[in-house]
Image (cartoon, rainbow, N blue to C red; front, side, top):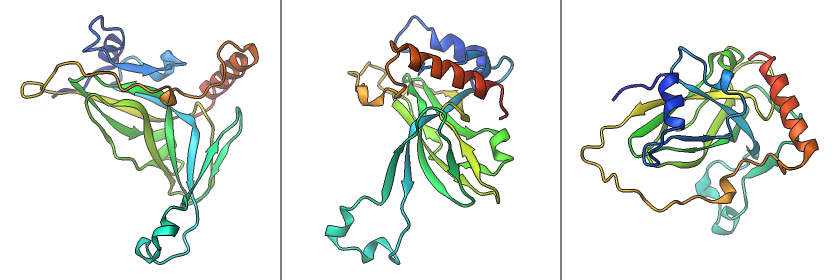
Length: 211
């Protein structure tokens, strides 16, 4: 099992064979998300977030079945340019902006970016993404620092490191696509000129802002 270089990742994104092709979409800023000489692809924060609500019970077992049906998270959709302020020791469930589809002979690890890590942001996610995965990747973000962190849609909060998989004992036959339009990143109507300008302006601003 070997790690793909950035150049190999780019080649996989345009592979003519659909069974070998890697899909990551949309890649809004290829020059910064796929940097030459490295071995990863940066992924961005999507608009949909889940904020766990404060817990008032000693454990889950204390709740009756009726109470278990009550959501314990608050669903939030960020507007363009709206920050999510992650306070010290606060935890949030997020999703990548990008939809990812892995072929049968690739898997990926989700790794936090060091520029965010120095601010105290950790990507405490289930890091392994298995072959044939299809959809946005869940990100479990936590601020382990002592200062609040502002997160925006389009921030490059994590990176994917891809490994080849030995398919010698695997069934490599294509499976029916499980694609759902619910997986598509909610950018707004791309035919709308105002939406397009907002996306371009925000990507440009985040490109020029560290991290």
